[in-house]
Length: 389
Ligand SMILES: [Zn+2]
Image (cartoon, rainbow, N blue to C red):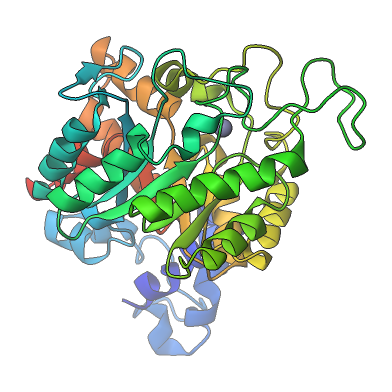
């Protein structure tokens, strides 16, 4: 089993190419083989420092379900899943979201029923997204801190309905602003504004508004607030506001490495949060930049983030692995709407098994180093795991 032990080191250093094939495997095998004759797995040929084919056959480790289970390096469990819920004002509403098959717009009471059903399947961690009532968007996004807003009501309703639930709330303004951007817009010519055409979000003017949203969520019972806006300095602003309001026990999960991604398309449709003009490249990360993503993680942790997130997940597994290697802080990855929609679309077309793809996607995200995964597959995969995967 010395070979299995040495391979166990591979996920610890995911950036070193352990997935690229046999030559790398030889490198990883060296330390164990160098310990003496017993490290060579009983190879009779004598001079070789380590076993090689045909004495060494890794297929032995894959020959039965029992063996595969014994040497499996990565596991999935329902308590590693965070289930996003789209909350809307009203009562008794459970409306299918066309771009996210199997997901719904839920009024606060229906969100509590959904959370209760999910908890029965082992999923007890929820991330809430909200919307204001129709026609109530404004330039500041003031509906986001309404104490009677859909998210605030849903936090209370789920807390009452689901003992043991862990409640996360998304903190942003884009679903509440009339212009659809994640902060207030700067007047033309504001210092520090980007030089792109189109509207520019005023970073510093946005921070107190985000803090206000976070405090309103904490008052309504959020365990964790999760800022997704990508403004500079927002974690520190939110931490200070929470502490000043008596919510020192509420944690901050930072969307630290959030990329400007086309994979958010179905979500923006669901949240009605697409920018009316311009795009989010002025504040979200450039998909080409891994080092800058690591700097964002460092900054957010320095500002007091308790946990960090990489979003999206699947096209950014290298970033997940790099963040994992660089910090001991809990790391979440967001298996976003476009990743989910691809699975559902392939399934609907008859091109692949949806459950098989979902399991493999979540396993890959965990294998890359995420502690937990925010995913629309949460309930579906929790049921699969209960049924034996
Ligand atoms: Zn936003």
